[in-house]
Amino acid sequence: MLPQSIHDRYAPSNKGISEANEIIESFEFMKRRDALLRVCHSLRIALPSKRIRLYEFLQPGSSGARFRGLVELGGMYANILKLELPLAADWFSRQTVQTSRHGEPILYPTNVPQPEPPRYYPWAFWKAEPPQEWIDILLMRGRKTIGKVSADNFRNSESKLPVKAGHCRTELHDLVETMRKDHPLANPSVIVEAHRRRILLNDLTDILQNMAHILNLDRARAYEFSIENNRFEARAEVGGTADPMFTSLDYFYHLPRTREDPISFFTYEQMQPAVYYRDEKRDFPGPNGEEQIHIIFKCDEKVGSDGLKCLADIPLIADNCIVGKITVDCIIQDPEGKEKRLDKLLEEKADVIKYFAQMAAKAITDANTSTGKFDWWQRFHLLRHGMSERTFTILIAIISAILGGAASSIVYYLLAP
Image (tube, rainbow, N blue to C red; front, side):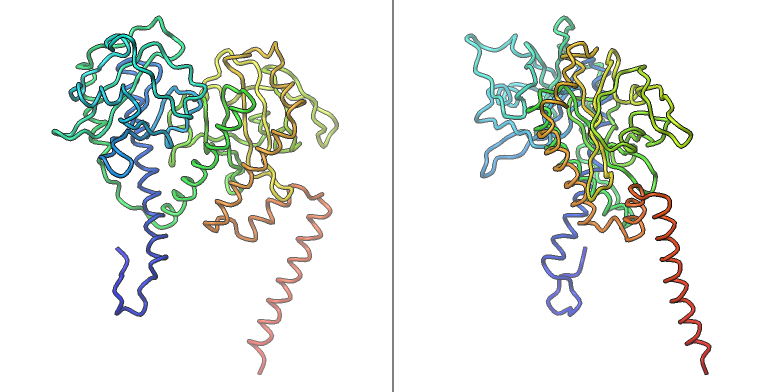
């Protein structure tokens, strides 16, 4: 804990203490989120269920008792971190708290009174296609309610949900323990990076959710371009991925910007939105003349794109430099691209897409500025992408001359009598 004594002349200000605590809280949040994603993944398999949402219970206060979203697997569009279910408005959540016991599923709406109570749908569920039935599993520590799990078989109504969860006792125990587990602090650079990543997760998820809503997309994923690693790194997604750790703090997914991933290669080199079809061949003006590049979907394994034949890649540009990209698809509405939904969007909604791309690019640059991620050399390296070889060589020569001159002057003064 930082010193706060008024008698210590070097004690940090209240603002400094607040900012430091906020950064540490972001680190704890990201580490907790990663741990919860892992255990929820195990629980979803054990139940089994297509989609689960984990909520924590907030004790009555000025806003009343409510459940607040923590993580979601297999869901569509909801920014679960901003989802709240107040007991005063949501009959089903209130029923779960009042009638359930720890670890025992309660099936809805089979056991609800008739006529069925109205469902509470916050804005985050706007395109979630609510299931006909689902289960709530109350989570308790002793006699204290700490949260609940909601599970359903999203888009697979023929699958039956379990009415008992005894076989998931280990997973439920691990979930309860993970919700209260503290994570030891890391070195300052890791803590600051966690804070930056939390900012990106929050801002980019909001942008993707609004983008998917307005453009009627099924999925959207945001990547940040890493100068140090020369690759696109996953930062946020809506619509679900196959890998629950897709945007985790430590094990996030990444795509190379080289020919190893042709789609990322084209996006980085051409800096233009485009639709890509699986197994097509695209022309690229290489140094030895025009060449054909075979399009593959390198993201298949982690994203879960079985049956998807086309997707769109949208570069995120700031100061004429690539800072990231957004990948979107219509895996449910038009998986094979026969309706040309993505092609029409890029043509008819170009201004809207550009607006969202600018917002996402600004979110990335703002997050980097707030944590001082880029130094002058990294910025120069990023700008180098838009330079010709001749310009780049001249600039390097000028910088070398300046640095060399400065070094000569220092040596002269050090050796001067």
